[in-house]
Image (cartoon, rainbow, N blue to C red; front, side, top):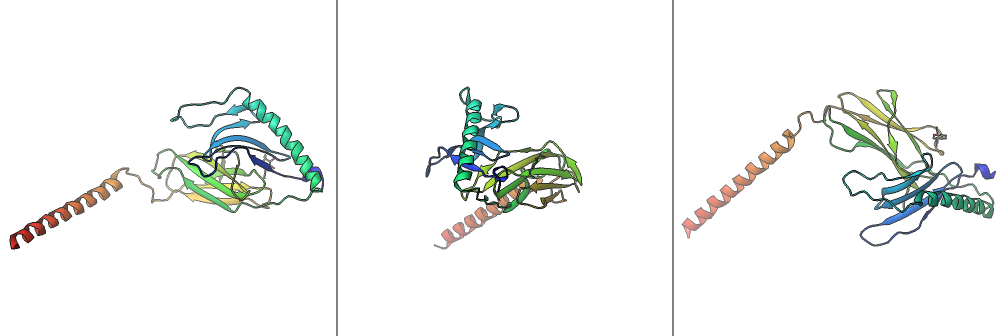
Length: 239
Ligand SMILES: *[C@@H]1O[C@H](CO)[C@@H](O)[C@H](O)[C@H]1NC(C)=O
């Protein structure tokens, strides 16, 4: 087996505080065709190196106080990629180009970020896990047509050494629309596809469900109090 064909993904977790409330991790890894360098907090991306845009990206949601790492973080990531590739080459030699393991994704899940309401902007999520090596490609369709504009996070290592990745697509639910996410991976001969259909179980009149539920609960509660009071008075009358 040639070195070129050897796709070995080395990932090293540099600092993880075990058995603590939170885990802060820096993960960097490389393969012949890919590489990643990401800082995470409790599994969420804080910052990652975008080797296409050649800069550090901070994909934090708008509700947190923005933070950045020191200048040169991206350049360090690039240097670490070099080290990773050299290490990988040496490991390949040491193991006599022993073919690396390949695991097909063990699960692909499709779901929405928020409860579905017709006409209200939402996010479709395609979560892929259990694969090795990283990464996967995820493509989306709507009613059979390819759609663009989805995003995917960098691979995150599972405890068993496999990886997981999540792709997101913004969408506005309309009754009858059918979405799919198709996952491509080195170890798959054909894409793994999951379907999401916007069906009539979606809410079209927001707020009615919870308020009916609350109203019924409140009524039952008041009935209980009334019955309790009744028996309390009754009991006192007898004694
Ligand atoms: C993912 O897509 C890229 C670009 O189209 C391609 O080069 C690569 O082989 C794909 N990877 C997999 C695992 O299919």
